[in-house]
Amino acid sequence: MNTPPQVVTTIADLATARARLAGTVGFVPTMGSLHDGHTHNMRAALDRADHLVVSVFVNPLQFGPNEDFETYPRDLDADVALCAEAGAAIVFAPSVDEMYPAPQQIHVDPGPLGDILEGASRPGFFTGVLTVVAKLFGLVKPDFACFGEKDYQQLALVRRLVDELNLDVEIIGVPTVRDDNGLARSSRNVYLTEAGRYDDALAIPRAIDAAQRSADPLGAARAVLDATDGLRLDYLTVRALDLGDAPTSGPARLLIAAVVGTTRLIDNAPVHVGENDV
Ligand code: PAF
Image (cartoon, rainbow, N blue to C red; front, side, top):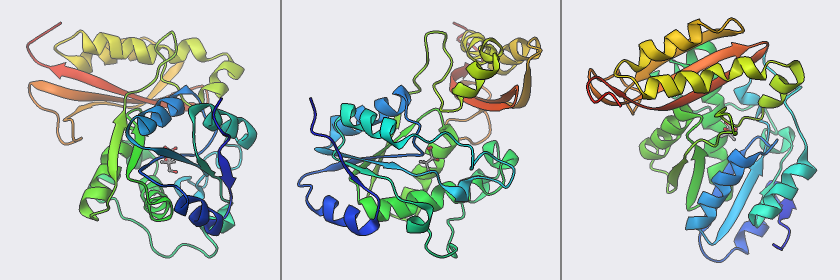
């Protein structure tokens, strides 16, 4: 049985609790509603660091005016229980006023990589993400920070943030956690089961499977997704591993965003373009 984490809600209390941690600190930033995807990130952090700090903060800066900030699932008690099980030392769960006591004037501009894919359909999203991640790094002062590969573009941008702003944090990408049917774990999956749309969503892992078996991953994934009535594609693309233009052959990344019912889902996976069909 792990010692329960210290739950702090103010920046001052975080500073006091953080100062008491001797040794290295791994950090997992979250928006709560934690599931085993987050648990994997926490384990990856504790594999490398002496202590784990988890933040639980639904960041208003990364939600558009018509997005689900107000209704985003929140359950701090359940989140703290999961952090306790994972062995977290500190859970930082600030209010919006604590993080943004005045309207934020300084924002991190993600550059062109922030305008494509998720950024194209969610303007301002990555500005909000990078701004809060930079603030959290400043507050938590971690040695390592773990981010899921499920949000592949976020991971790429956080790597770039740390690189270009010379932040002293090592970024660890953690492979996507999937349920028994291959659907990537996401806090938003609860909306699918409530609305009975779960089976439609399974076209996404089926498309990934088809893509990974084909020399034409884009065509193979498109064939599966086009044949699914209950799913509307937002984007489907193959890109280089750093999200630059797709290679004509070799390793690449397939990225999908689709709406099932009213729930927008994203997923991505490694694929191979060209010869070497598996
Ligand atoms: O991936 C998330 O949950 C959020 O974008 C993050 C990194 C916690 C920033 O709010």
